[in-house]
Image (cartoon, rainbow, N blue to C red):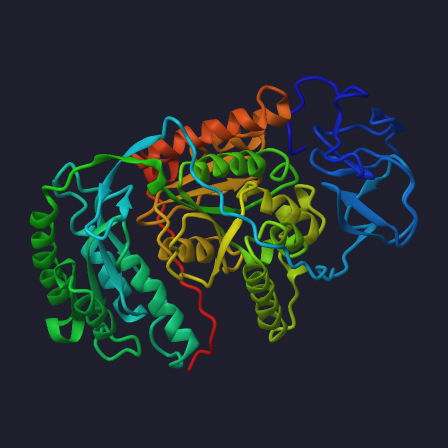
Length: 513
């Protein structure tokens, strides 16, 4: 059994009805067969045991009839479903829905209007951005330099660093050579440029082998064009005497960086400088009831402060696009979102895949039947403010307001794109449990249920399961997340940071040569 039961369920508290028009409800705890359910005028008895987070039919549903959750279609009955039946993959079918032609009219952007703006302690950068951390980064240009980048960062592990410096961090990866010039290399370069030139990075070193496709000169040329070459330097193993020579040369350069950034200090800045990336992983049925809506409430608070929130994971808005289209500030942004989904659909078709391949076995065990149901819960992370922009993977986010970024649903690749786009904080909701982090951006973990929070307390920062337990409201947990993010932005370490999680994985889209 996945979830603990502290008291036997009753007819009125065993399940959760999420919308008056729904014909299914969600089991709050594991519900035994024969349990009477009374809500919204329905009085039915369960025909089988219903695991926590799974769906139960509130009335008879005919074959081919739509099944509703959140007031939206999540699939169609494959066979007759009786009132009280368990509704899941065995009797609920998936069908790709065509988002109706939605062309919203112009809507004014939401403005910050807080009488008492919130603040945090951050690092002001010369270009006006604000960092929530202060790192020196060692970024590998290719797999051929990946191991050496790790050695360089590890060589400082036992050294005493200035209090204002959070550390020397490596960005190893498996790309950068054996790939075609064009979209694939362009995307990698955009990603690495984003982590090199990031508000949480005070100075950076780009490290290459010397002969790879992804030459370090590309990045050094960018720095020179921006008239900021002092914060970015580069070297190669082939020109530095191999692995040992590159480590020594890098250590010398990094010591110069340390001397240069030693005087930087945190200063009080308004919360409008928050650029929050949103991600979910290991989702369950409670994600769309507790953690995601609470994070959405927090996002509205951030946008009201003049900050920026960035929703990602194109594979996890499919089936819920209409909810985002209605929020698009103008028709052009709506069309841009639809074009992004259509482009991803074509990308998947090259490999014989579909969006419904997204839900994992863990998602389904947690009660999510298909991608339609998963997406409807996932988009709640972004709150209710207007959609201001749609950007591609690792593209620089300018903000303010709510922005969507095209990324896969695969967590390490998604948060890499968000970080490269310039987010200085990440909020990550999870139902089944996740341990992911990122080298230079704090990742705050929000558990959707109390069982996961208690089981993985060393990884979880916030327990949104208190909402389903009846101990807190969505608004209360949303405020708790907001306050935790302000503390994190000011330097408080998340659980992922304390454990040293630093997952980094650029999105590879092209062939291997």
